[in-house]
Length: 299
Image 1 (tube, rainbow, N blue to C red):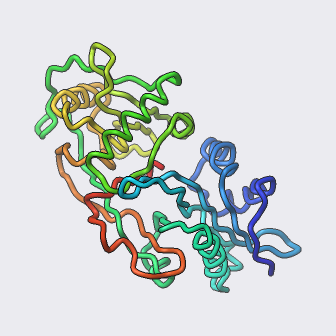
Image 2 (spheres, helix red, strand yellow; image 1 turned 90 degrees about the vertical axis):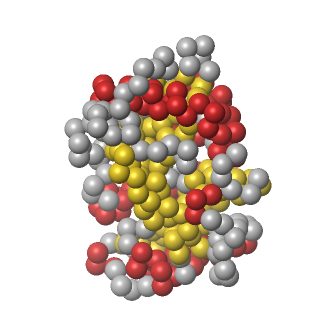
């Protein structure tokens, strides 16, 4: 068995393994993933003359860590063909990936585990939670208020301004968050659309942005759409809540996964979301409080 990092031109060779393991992802999402995400990814594989049998993807993100920007890698698409499992292939690939991240001086790496017990033996620990709640149309904290705010899809010419708004809002509330630019929102809009959703902005009548959120029809638990990563200007909380409540009046009760601290929604809970590790070992994230980290599954 050969263990190696693929060249960028070879990354697409992993698609058959991806499709055979992640059967819950439909064709539209896999097309998006291999068009937008894989082109920038580091991919490590275990292969022999019969093909690729195991893989680990590292997707790069700019992350603001205590006011300093770092290029870090999000570990995703960890997969092994069923016949090749329990042979240590994943351990070897993770070790290779972590060695490269350590050489590059990356302070940490992170992933969203399918199960904590898979990654805990490799030194990964939970370090971030996600706030979850409900945006309800009646009988809760988000009963409709009169609002002149507008919720609408973000426009391509607004991506840079949207990134600046989000970076400015998050930097005042959090120590660790994904740093955005126009290219980030171009990709994120493509991702949401392949899940029958949009990246939305909340605007005042004069056009000033006061918030943003993502929508998705990927799950149908309530008949309404799911909202993800709701980010609101702290100075316009009540106006933004009014706009969100009006949105829920149109689309029905909405489950909300990931929102900024100043919002208060129905049935609120905090769920462990991300595990992380310092490449090369050592104490990880001991100086950070979970409530000062804002990284969601929308990355």
